[in-house]
Image (cartoon, rainbow, N blue to C red):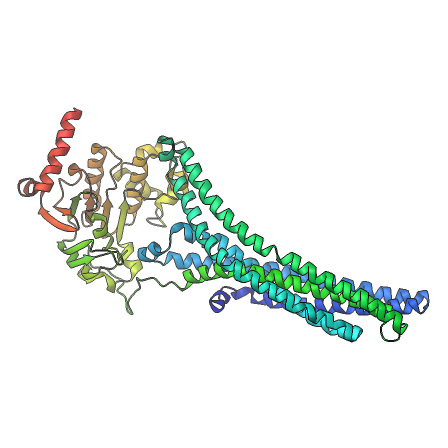
Length: 578
């Protein structure tokens, strides 16, 4: 896990190493200062001159300035290294997620990936910050303070050793009890984020059904659950402070009681006042070091679970990869499904022995009820999933042999609920073609019947689209997505119920424009309306993952019961509406 995380440090290794080196010198200065103070106290006690006091005072000021400078430099380098590490970690995770297949995405919930990219990375960043600074400073301070304590106090310094087992025993117990709670709470964080994401996306539905109170209560339950687990964990971690305070007070009492008695009995021959003051200072430094170590321990306890969740994403390999020598040229838009069967994970078969052959340039309609696996079928063409059995050919070649980028650049998919990104209309359209000119954009928008409504906006093609296309209607969003796909000039274009939000007249105009603009492109239209596919070269009727009919509109009306029932039911609805 540590090796994988360390790969994200990269260009920030130098500030990380400099932090540790500078902290070392800071600790040396802080450990020498009490020693010099003890010498000064003894000289004052012996009745030294003012010049001697001034000399030692100047030395102490210089040492304090050096220590302060080292501390400031270490803090600066530490901030640079930790923030850079977090940036690289997020970048590495995001790039990894971009390469995931749909199957990989299905494995991780969207809300969980968001938590890992935000909360978990922040936890690991804080732990890294403490490791390169505090985790170096505290052990060095502990060791040097121990050594200096024994040099100055002899046997009395053994009190430092006596309290350490008490402290470490307490820390081990705290960690063992707190760790399971943190594991549990991060999973609940995922569920909480999922609830928030779901609610915000479905806000219109929530309001239309007046379910605000229900959603508030549901969120309150989830938030309270997270709060309760965090409270339990924090209550356990809260014991860290009292244990540290007990050890600190024990050291102070022992040193003051026995040290003072020892000074009086030996008349300062064995231990003098200066040494006693030094012992108290070193005792305080030792306890502060132990307290910082305990804080590091707590932070690491919290971050280990976050680190494991991050590494889980970084170690995940996409199930879809290019072959050794991928093909980077697609001959045409012909498609062949050779006895294809498919299932998601361990579920039952979704597609059953599909044997289908589509010529390049043909217009294919796909009709079927909800759950008939229409979308699953077309997702195998751009290799969003790999088949379970059989093979899918595009341009006469198995899709597994193509370079993934090449394949997907030649297969455009327009979904029913396609996404527009925050940015101008121009920027959204250029997802289809990065260097598209304004004339090209206008042309495809006219074909998609989008140009008229775009020109009705004050800023026309420079109109800003809100996240998810919140400031345009469903029909407008679909037409923009169709225009974006047309800009790619692909060999295959798939419309997955992507004209469901437009009227039949606009739908017909879009199909007419496609026939004229991309006659050689294979067009696959998944639709619920028979009118949307009636003029297709071939119509495929699907039911429960099987092809139950193939033919023209006229043929299926006569020979396919499912198609005929859909056609008649929609025509009756049309007559009733009239």
